Image (cartoon, rainbow, N blue to C red; front, side, top):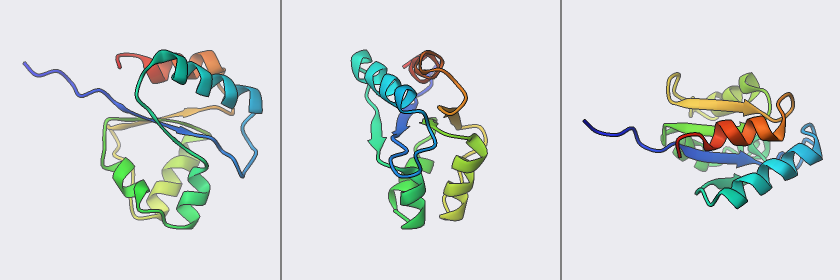
Length: 112
């Protein structure tokens, strides 16, 4: 019986769009840092998509994947636009626009 692989954690700083409350972004980042869990932080997924950054394909291919960003439909659309659609059953997008930092951190860090 093999264990499920630990999810890759991806944190979007949403640096350019300025649509996620600053306090939530800061608190989520701090909680991820304090946890000791391995995660990747990017400045802005929207900018990466606009520049067709090849790292998006790498992220999409590294399921299971948990992403802290904004609206799930937007994040999924960004990946699809770049030819790197997120897997239906292997990616979870958490919404820092509507969820609290505690909710995001708890969901990001479960079973890692």
